[in-house]
Length: 408
Image (cartoon, rainbow, N blue to C red; front, side, top):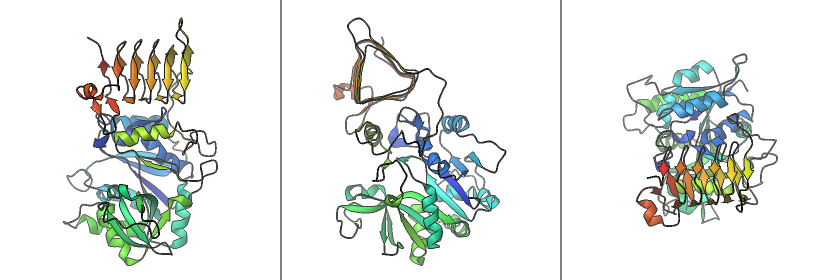
C-alpha cells in the first residue's frame, strides 16, 4: 500500500519497569524468551504487508537500535523500509516533549513520503493486529482520524484515554486518564469502559495541520491523547475502530491486548503464554512473529546421578543447558544454564542466566547476564528480598542486568 506510512513511537523510558529499563528503553525490553516488546508492533505491520515504517527512538536507544539492525533490516532494492530515527532536535533545542511533538519533529519524513494516510502506533504492548483491516475501516468511513479501542475493566480506566461513541462509530466523547469513578462506562455495561489503545490512523493533511497548530500552542502538552484528539473529535470526523473486530486466522476468537507497563503486568503477560488455552499464539503459521535469533544449538537436558531434569508448563530458550533441575511455569530465555537440584517456579529469565547447584527461585525475573550462587534462595522471604532487590506490589522479585547474587 504505497499511500500508507507507519510511525512507531519507540522512545518510551519505561520507568515503572525498572530495573529492566535501567540500561534500555521500554520497547527494547525482552519478552517471551525470544522477542523484544517492539517486535509485536512491527510484526503487526509486516504481516499486513505494510512496510514503510519509521521507528522513532529517544531514551537509551542503543540496545533497540542493535536489535532493529539485526532483526528488521530490509533490502534497499524496493521502496520498502524499516528505519530507526533517533531524536535529533530537528525543529528546536528540545527532546520530544510528548507523542504529538515526536511526530511533529519528524514532520519532513511524512511530507517526503507523499503518503495519503499515516499510522501512528505505540510499541510496548503485547497483541496481534492485522493493521490492514483497520486501514480498510479508516478508508471506508472517510474519517480524518481513526482510533483503535478495546474494552477494559472500569477499575483500569485511569490508565487510558476513555472513549464514547455513537451507533455509527463516531467518537462523541473522550477523556484522557479520568479517575475510575468519573470514567464513562459502555452503555449497558457498567463494569467496562472503551479505552484507546494509543494506535491512530490519520489523513496526512489533517495530521500535519493539527501538528503545526499544536506546536505553536504554548498551553499544549503536545500529546495526542491530551491535546490532539480532544480538539478533533467535536468536529465529527473521528471514528473508533473496535479491536475485537480484528480477526487473524489461527488466533483465539477473543482479541488479546496487554499493557506491560509495570513489573506485575509484565510478569502476568508471560504467565498468559503458559496457559493451556493461550490467549495469543506463538505458533500461528498464518501470523509468524519475526525477531532476531542468535546462532545457538537447541536446548539441552541432562540428568545427573539421582537428579532428573523435569519441565512443566514452561518455555526453554535455545542454547540453554538444564542439568538435573526442576522447572515449573517459567519462561527461560537464550542460554539459561541451570545446575543440579535447582528449583525454578513462576520465573522469567531474559537470557544468559547461570543458576548454581541447589538454588531455589520463585516468582523471580532475572535480567540478562545474571549469575546466582549455589543454594541461594530468592522469592520465598520477600522482606529479606526487599533489602537487596526490587520487589513489585504483587511480590515479583526483579534482579538487574549483570548481577552476581549470593557470592562472597
